[in-house]
Image (cartoon, rainbow, N blue to C red; front, side):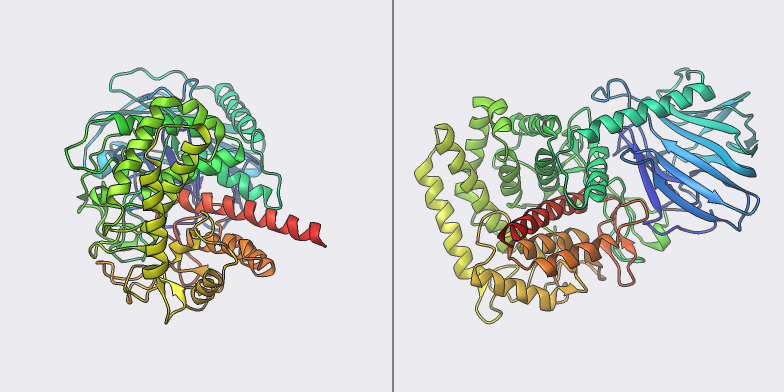
Amino acid sequence: MPGYPPIADHGLIGDLQTAALISAEGAVDWFCAPRFDSPSIFASLLDQERGGHFTVAPTLHDMNVRQLYLPDTAILITRFLTAEGVGEVVDFMPVNDRPDAPTDRHRMVRAMRVVRGTLTFDVQCRPRFDYGRAPHTLTLDGNTATFHGPDLDVHLRSTVPLDTDGRDIHTTVTLQQGQRAGILLETSAPGAAPAPATQQGMEAAMEETRVFWHEWIRRCRYRGRWQHMVNRSAITLKLLIYAPSGAPIAAATMGLPEQVGGERNWDYRYTWIRDASLSLRVLLDLGYFEEADSFRRWLGDRFRGPRPPGSEPMQIMYRIDGDPHLAEEILGHLSGYRDSSPVRAGNGAADQLQLDIYGEFAYAMTHSADLVEVAGYEAWKGFSSLLDWLADNWDRPDEGIWETRGGRKHFTYSRMMCWVALDRGIRLATQYARPADLSRWIEQRDAILVQVMERGWNPRRKAFVQHYDSEVLDASLLLMPLVGFISPKAPSWLSTLDAMDRELVTDSLVYRYNPEASPDGLRGSEGTFSLCSFLYVEALARAGRLDQARFAMDKMLTYANHVGLFAEEIGPTGEQLGNFPQAFTHLALITAAMALDEELDKAAERR
């Protein structure tokens, strides 16, 4: 582990309850258990010295490395090509028989094989529990090692002998062409006995994992021009859903910087109502009804849960089990990725007011007639009470979609999404003849539209702006035509799109906004926002600018990493920045691909 790998030099594996990042150097340098939001066991991505890692790689330094997924699966293969031989490490996490049942037991298989020549693999397993704060002890019995942490045991079972290195494991394995070896890492509650591990058993687990993912992706409805990238994005979204609750997380990591050396280092391992709602709408479009219905039930529990008098109906985010407490803690003992500090666990933005979440929620949950019908009358009562509250509370300043820490403002995007919530509620009540205060909802929906058109529009800029009485542009407004607030070919929208093209777009990459013109309460800068770049593609497509849209789409896909994954942002030299992989970006990739396919097909029919 000589230095920090680029954020993009990783693949993601997981079992629908937790996940691991594996670098092209063969290192597991991010892994939390037993859940996505649990304290880390391996976190060398945030601190090379204190974080811990599990590395399996050849001992040679002069080699080429290639990393790929077994097609349409979450099985990751890292190939090491040397003059002495070619070796592979195959990494995956078998999905439990009951992925919807929470468990402490999670398995990670690391299979070594040599396909040409002879190679010696160096194996180091150095766990550091509780973000590197808690000590552990080690017991070794033949080919089985157990690391005893404060609340969890980590078992390492190998088909080859293991050697100790203090409280860690460090051994070497020499294999010739055609030979294989395997190591199975398993977490469990303290004192639980590990199951035996054999080469045959690991190969059987790999086949079961392959079948699971092939059967899942076979249900995908998308058959368009960007099939490979859409499938990879769909699998990534699935990997980021906590199966026991149905709640998606925003990203698999915490603390990865939006600017290397800066302070914009957040914890994304939680469920944002906004991100999760839009993710599940995309999965519905792809044909994954079960995932959407699971999240609907999770949301219903948030409505029914107790809340303090006078509080909003929903927080902007929760833990994956629905716990609303996400106190933000600075882990001062961790240096951060390439000295990007502070490293934060938890997220203080959970207490912010962001009125747009009700719009994204309504936009997603009213998308499918099947989803509406299974929700039933009780769910309608909860939804209508939410809209009653929104009708009385939409005209308030809030922190906005980007969770700025510079004070509340009248954000145009927040107003627009309040309009979306009321509009979808009105449509639903009318279509299904449900009881509702329709006259009140219609009155307030129309008042929002008038207000946005009069105060969100800046005549000097000839564009809709970030918040009232400002001249700042904001890429979140790329959603205006996509949610039906305005026609994608309306003159005022095309003028806004042109203004964004001049100010926020650089070589088809899109910045969220200009923080110098609109201070957000944080120091430093950030890269272009990959979500916004894909929203830009979709907006161009709907506006009929198809050549520009297709070129922007194809260029944006070149910024994916070597296995098709995106972090939150793209830096000035094309590097990926921020937490990784980010669900928001992958859902936007899918919607952009579907929209562009649709518009290209329409154009072909007209010719």
